Amino acid sequence: MNRPKFYVYLPIVFALVLILGILIGSTFSTKNPNGAMAIDGNNQYSKIDQIIKYIEDQYVDTIKTKDLVDNTIVSLLSTLDPHSSYISADELTASNEPLQGNFEGIGVEFNIVDDTIRVISAIQGGPSEAVGVQAGDKIIKVDGKVVAGVKITNKKVMENLKGKGGTKVKVSIMRRGKGKLLDFTITRGTIPIYSIDVAYMVSPKIGYIKISRFGATTYDEYMQAFEKLQSKGMQELIIDLRGNGGGFLNTAVDIADEFLGDGKEIVYTIGKARPRKDYKATKKGDFENGKLTVLIDDGSASASEILAGALQDNDRATIIGRRSFGKGLVQEQSEFSDGSAIRLTIARYYTPTGRCIQKSYAAGVDAYYEEENNRFAKGELENADSIKISDSLKFTTPAGKVVYGGGGIVPDIFVALDTSGRSLYLTEVLYTGLVNDFAFEYSDKERQNLKGYKTIENFNRSFVITPAIIDEFVKYAEKNKIKRNEKEIVHSESILKNQLKALIARNIFNGEGFYQVIQSQDNVLKKAVELLK
Image (cartoon, rainbow, N blue to C red; front, side, top):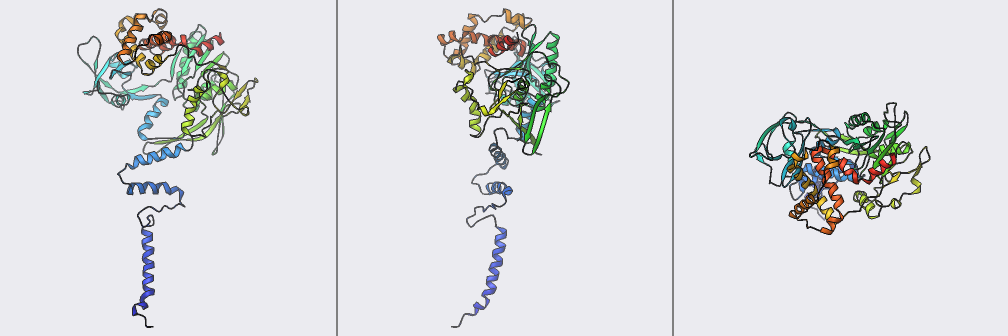
C-alpha cells in the first residue's frame, strides 16, 4: 500500500506536540482541564498559600484576602489547644492594655445609662479631672457630634474618647443643676489601669488585698498596698484571687517571692522545645512568716493558679473557696510586622510538688469552656464531694498535705456557693444591669446628701436602704419591663439591699466603698477572717 506523503513528517509533528505539551504543562501546572486547581500535595508548607491564592482568583464573590488569612490562622491555632490564639493588629493594642497597665485617653470611668454616657468618676490625676469633669456628668457631644440617644455602645465610646496622648478632644457635658451644656477641651494622656482592685483592713490586724490580674505594674501596686496596710498594723493577710484570669507568669512569681523563703520552688516550666526552667524564691520577701490565706474560685486561672499552687505546695497559705479554672499552659507572644500577633503555647507549668493543673481539652474548645457550667450542673459549687479527681493525680506537700493536679487548684477549705435568697426576679434585675443603673441614678440625685458621709466606715455604719428606696427601685425596674413579684422581692430583699448599698458606695467612694459594703454577705471572705482570728 502506498502511504500519503505527510506520513514522512509525522515524527516531526509528534516532536512538536510533545514540546508544546511540555510548555503548556509548565505554564498551567496549577490547573486541570476544567479550570480547578491541581494542588502540589508534596509541598505541605505551600498548600495553604496555593489555596488562598486560588480562592482569591476563582471564588464566586470578591473577598478580602486579609480577612481570609486572619480567619485561616485563627482556625489553625484553635486546633492546637484552647489558649493558642491569633490577635489581629486592630485587637492587639486593646488586648495588651490591661496587662501593660495603661492606655491613652481622657481618663474617665463611665457607664451607659438610658443611651447616654454617664461619668462614674474622673480618674485621679487624669486629663478629665484636671479640666473639671465630675462624677454624674452626661457626655452629650464629642467634637461637636451628638453621642447621646444614638444607641451608643462601649466600643463607640472608646473609639471617640481614646486616642494618642497629646491629641485634643472637645466634649460637651450636661451637669445636674446647669441650664446649658458645658464645653471642655481635654488633652488626652496616659491613663493607668490598676490591677489591685482594693486594699483595706477587714479587722484591726487583718489586711485584705484583691488582685484582678497579673500585669506589668501589679507587683509595684501590690507593694504599695502591702506597705499601706502594714502601716495600719496589719499582722495577717488575705489575698483575693477570685475572678483573676491570670497574666504575666513573672509577675505571679515576684508576688509569690514575697511570701516564700530563699530557695523555695515557686513554679517550673517544660516544653518540647523548651528545657525545664525553675523559678525560685529569693531573699527579698517581706511577709514570709505572717498568717496568710488565699481566696480562689472557678474564675481564678493561669498566673493566679501559679501563686495559689506555690503557696499551697509549700504549706505557706491556706487556700479557701472553690476549685480554680485549670489552665497550666504557657503562651509566648510573637508579633508580625503588620502589628498582629500570635500567642502560641510553648510549655506547661508545674507547681512545686510536680503537679500540672491543666484540665483536659481533648473534647475540643467548646467543651473545654463549657466545663465551668458543668461544674454548677453537677453540684460541685455547692458540695465539695462532687469534685472528681483521679487518685493518680495525687501529690503530697512537705508537711504531708494531699493536693491534686489535672484540673485546677482544689482549695484546702471549700466554701459552697451561697444560693439562699436567690430568685428569678433578682437574676433579672442584676443581669440586665438595672441594679447598677438605679444605684447610679440614686447616687447622682442624692450626691450632695451622700457627701455628708465623710468616710466609708461612716457610710457603711449609718446609711440604710429603706423600704422607700426598695419601692423606688421596683418601680424603676417596672418602667424597664421587669414585672413586680412581691414574693420574690421579699425572698431576695437582703441581697438586693446589699447590692444597692454597695453600688451606691462605689459611686461615692469608688471600689473600696463597694468591697467594704459587699463583704457583709461574702461567705468566702468571712471564712478567711474566721480562720485567721
